[in-house]
Image (cartoon, rainbow, N blue to C red):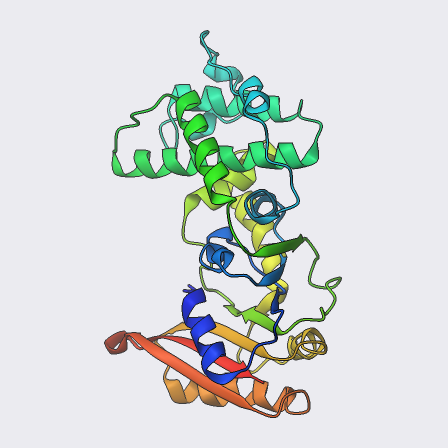
Length: 313
């Protein structure tokens, strides 16, 4: 599981590289919007490629500055209080009853999904759907740990709408794309960041990721939801001894002044990483950059848990 630490990455870059006066970073593959929370306070420009559509919706809504902020009256029109009960048997998400959501919560999830179909403006629709994600995540966590849901569904929706308004007050400028592995192009940038994903590791650690993806698709099979997400991320897998992605790294760094590879490791010695990951990357990027530096910090040395950044400049 990658522990992407944006502040540590920025600190490492500042300690080793003289950034341009107009820094712009490119992330060829990112899948969790929380990774950008700290970076959003910087004055940088960021080009973020999000190959998972359900997450790209959230990225665009929370970080893409050009999207109009939805008027409260518009949101209110699609966040009505449900006064009549809805037959659970007709709810397309009834399989999640008492696993992730209550009967009332499922009624609102059905209503909100149907209401989203009436929102014609794409940016407003993405804003609406991203707020529903926050509500779903709140419910899933509360139900998992037995916490009380103190607010009614329409109230918690309104709460996240206000938080959404506050969060958009950030300094950074974002451009969000949804290219697949085979169609993404290199960007003219001061720095390109690769968050390495290893085959067979759980790169997503919360159920809300898969539940939300399934909800958007109108189904409840989380195995199918996970499968569709993995299919999008699988091409980016780093496999020891396999150089299939090296041409991708070479291509993505063509127009970047510097680059970094970030990963988290457990149970593998530092020497093995140096031999089977660091050295091969240094060899493939030898003609692109003059210098490279590996930095790492222990998380739990007894279990060989470390976070790594391999910097090229």
